[in-house]
View 1 (cartoon, rainbow, N blue to C red):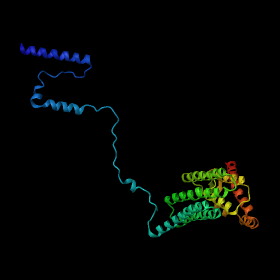
View 2: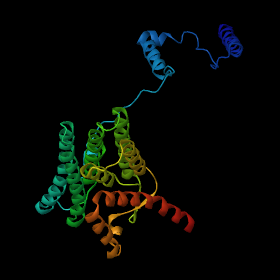
View 3: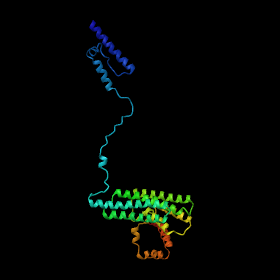
View 4: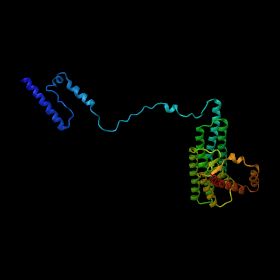
Length: 308
């Protein structure tokens, strides 16, 4: 009877436990049997059970911890070299010569700024013309010597910004300061600097056309401004401001302008006209050449639109 009573008592406890679990939404089906914790108390298993439950328990809800990946030297290994190809002594000398021409253009541009600030505007304009010569020389030498590199292209762009994007506007401002209001000269000079920066940035990221420039290049614009100062065009200050502003806008335009290589291939009799004109009146000839070149861009653009 005692055994049967204890058995009936256990069955009753199981049924009550199930019903209690269903009422409270518990997932446990069976309760622990009576006196089941005695072995745990005796052998210290209660602490082990708690530790296991705490280990299995889910972590608090929150953002996943950020795992930082260790920094390796792969970035330095995959960096592009300054001079692609074989690093022989001869190629390094050629590479240094080309970059020396680029640095010469940059240094001449800085000195043009200093000289223009001291008031000797024509000497500063002559230094700008020398910058144009060195800028064309470094590209020609790089192609001929076979040392063209992305580093050289970036160096050339930075030097152009210094010489043609900063020095040329300063020289123009110094030449116009006494003839036009200071504010107008400052606006025209700032416009040249801003358009030169946009032009150089666009040139670095845009695909190149082997036949035409997209807009007047900064080198040619700086050469026109420097020659304008050296020659001393006898035109009113307002006309000079308009001409400088127009030249700045043509740098950021999309009009196609012929490259120097295409101009050299023109018939020889076409070159006789500017030479004879320069002997007669150099200022008028220079003005006509500049105006003709600026007009050629819109005309070529209209011709391309009609042929498409």
